[in-house]
Amino acid sequence: MKTPHIVPLNDVGFAGTVLMPGDPLRARMIAETFLENAVLVNNVRGVQGYTGTYHGHKVSVMASGMGIPSIGIYAYELYTFFGVENIIRVGSAGGIGEGVGLRDLVAGLGANTNSAFADQFGVPGTLAPTCSYALLKTADRCAEALGLTLKVGNLLSADTFYDPDPTVLKQWAACGSIAVEMEAAGLYLTAMRCKKRALAICTVSDLPFTGEGCTAEERQNTFTDMIRLALETAAASDGVTA
Image 1 (cartoon, rainbow, N blue to C red):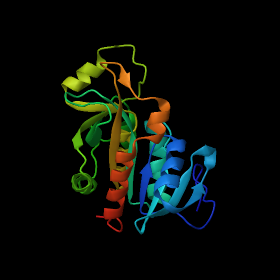
Image 2: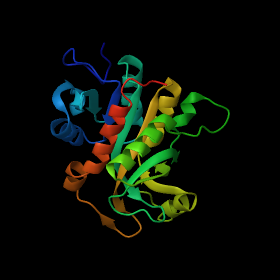
Image 3: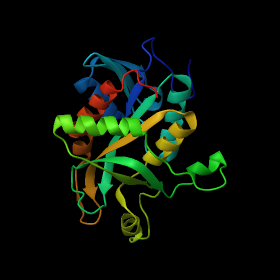
Image 4: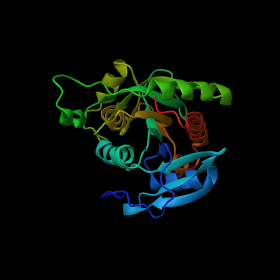
């Protein structure tokens, strides 16, 4: 099986759970640093996908690129054609909620968005993109076991990285969004439509209201707590499809 964006390089295939960072270099770093016997299974357009094991559990990691349309394509193909049941986004986000600080771990219970991505489904109303409660519950339990604090709330998945209105993020924050990123809503909507499971876990890489932030190299290489948490969640979810 191959798709326009995923062409397997061998017979290793994808695991039931895929970790999905936006950056292909972060995908490679996760595979090389955290997985045993990691094998490159896709490299179309340089969007690297690897499969290996973590504590004896088969896990894959593949980049999504930036934005809702990009993650929507990769998630749909993984769910529909490659037998993937769970996708855990591991990315960076801007902290906009009260009490959210630099390098905090946040998980998206839901994902607000200014995207029209859900219009394709033709429902006579507004779809509410939400995560898999089973994955979120598992991640919360794993965070506690690892001694990590996981802040849970609604994310904002924005199509506009450079918004000309400087008040927009404060308006979303006032309505309960705790962090802003660019992919979770597309992932959640795709999982809902495909009857699969998804969760977005992000590290707060910058604080838009204060100007504090991490470097590109730090975003690529140092968000290890998030990766460990996602891998533990993947291991605990191995074989679970409900």
